Image (cartoon, rainbow, N blue to C red):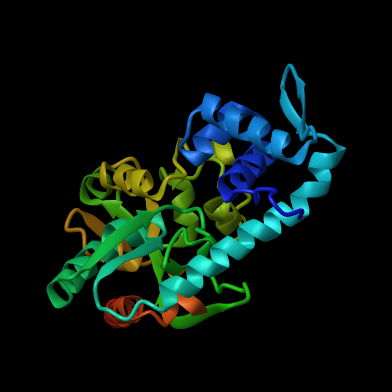
Length: 300
């Protein structure tokens, strides 16, 4: 770069990537937590500085020009470098204070982790805990979370993983439902009952088919994909449902139905980026979380 030419500001590159990847100024603004005029000014400033048009404007939004397309790879490399710097800096924090962000699935995050977080706060009052509950996997490379509780084995590079055990599943129904409809004793008797199914997810549907019952989605008269909503439907007496043994047995309003089914188990993995895992505050919460989850999974 010639002497006197200003270096390209990261905020401009960030705006360029957001527009290129999301197709419009408004969508990019939402992702960046900014405003459409601000993003528009950033794109204009970048084009002025580079002396090149980066986007073609059309009715449906913006698409990169040939120059813009050529810039995508180095811009993404710049974004990765920024994230790597943040990760390395986070890993060098030497105090047991600050915030640690934990992400988990909906059921684990709502049913199991709150009590563990309460114990963490008692043990380490200077560490703040941020709990991100979602069934979408957060990206540990981009610092969307410091520690993840996964129900699958992560395979990304540069991640530290720890297998803690397995979550077991069983059939449950509310006392009110069983008083009204009776209790099935064999898997085939489920066909004469109401079973709470899933809407777009296919796990329960496939489970029935693998057991030799070729039911269709419409056979489940009540359906929900959200795990929390699913459990509430079972608790309300809408039918027999399938869920975590630890959750069902902990609910006085539910009754476990021993059908002799060999239901799948889900592995529980603790995961963090290796650069962040070494930070003392993250390492401390990792240890407390591992201890709490091991104790939980050891329950009968």
